[in-house]
Figure 1 (tube, helix red, strand yellow):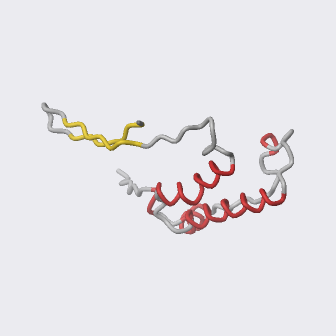
Figure 2 (cartoon, rainbow, N blue to C red; figure 1 turned 90 degrees about the vertical axis):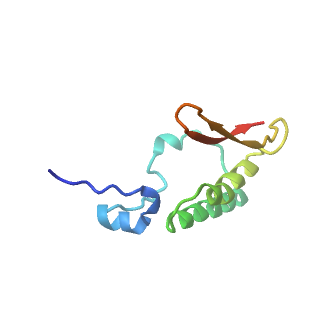
Figure 3 (cartoon, one colour; figure 1 turned 60 degrees about the vertical axis):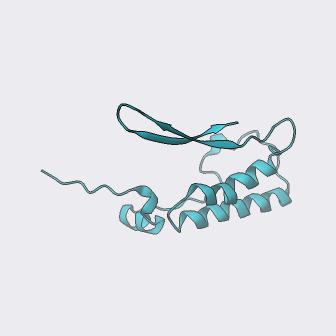
Length: 115
């Protein structure tokens, strides 16, 4: 019987995956042409900002572990700001920590609720 050694993808550096599986990053502009038709022109200043967000993401990707908070700060927050998602009519809500405890089995479930 073949033993399988599972490793979480979040702890493997991307360069190790590239070497092991002969992966190659494709930067060809027309790699997915169906996603690029009938789009509005993006101003140069916006392209520069988006290129910085992309570079920040790939920098985080190359230095695991890829954690939620750095991704939020480096990628998601700038994109939301750029797309005006912090302006009206989009209200900002915070999350409240919650802990649930099961009396029968002793399980504890922790999570967050949107306020």
